[in-house]
Length: 290
Image 1 (cartoon, rainbow, N blue to C red):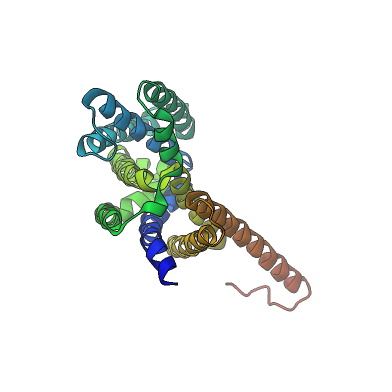
Image 2: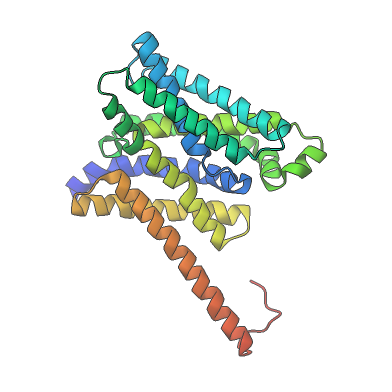
């Protein structure tokens, strides 16, 4: 038991920190219908980090590498914010897909110019969550707390824009600046999280708990609490599964996240079906509201 706790304690704490911030972002991402923003921003950050390695011999995780990655993310955030407001003929999701393809091609081209490029690609996809230590958890917590505080301070305009973009524009809100803030903070969070957990885990934590909670509640608070709870349970189950059966941690966490999403949707379907049958048989008053 003590061996398991010493091995999985820091990874689980890191998962909880990522679940907290990515769950909040995920609810907004689903509302905005920009599902693949995570993968696109992660790939763009990888382009910046790889360029820093080629130009300045900066190692992965160095301040120069982070600065270049964050610079690319900020440029992408400004681009997405302007495109959504100024280019109405093309959906933002299509623009995100194109930018991901271009960034992936650029990253693969530059990785081919570096030594051990295949190792870099593997780390970016799978991460190294099992080797997380408490120093990594502290860095994650500080970064995510700062981003979370900014998101909380701007929660009202961000929620208004996520709920009704056209209405926010009509009301005279400065949607470009608020969108830039949202995508910049999301990109900064993703840049830090991907280095540790990899693209697959970060994407899973961003989308799957939020999607499951969306099926269970129509309120912002309910969705957020549901995403946090489901994400925490799935992460714990995934880590225990990987420990028990000696599987890779990242894929195990994502598989359990997927199982949680499917289980939640099936449970909701049967609940609504049984409720409908009860109403038909007169067992539930049709005027009752839940």
